[in-house]
Image (cartoon, rainbow, N blue to C red; front, side, top):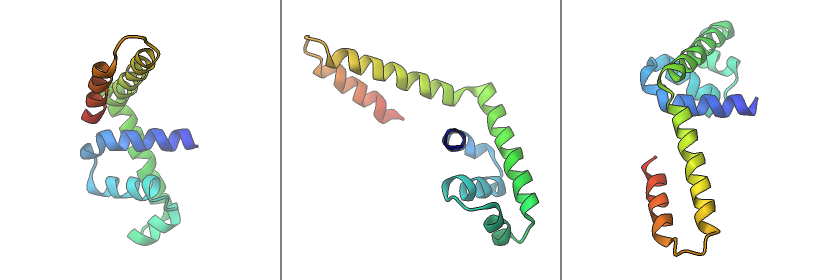
Amino acid sequence: MLEKTTRMNYLYDFYQSLLTPKQRSYMSLYYLDDFSLGEIAEEYNVSRQAVYDNIKRTESMLEEYEEKLLLFKKFQDKNEILAQLRNSLEGSSIDSSFCLKLIDDLEILD
């Protein structure tokens, strides 16, 4: 469950601008603020089933966006490459301070 929550949080971060305000609100409350379905339903004066259906539809939409745009996959791949590069340079006998500075600059861009 933690893996799914983490994934949804990342997908939400990348694609939230493609969601409706209601979808953004439900996802934010459910995944970021850890509200229960009942708490969200009470907040919006709708049924728990309506909240559940909206969240499940939105999750599917986020997964479809990721299938097409691959923003999260590219983010993960870039971070993996940066980590490997950092590890290689830190164990190296060459003066790697400039390269490490460039890696830090790349990380800031995210």
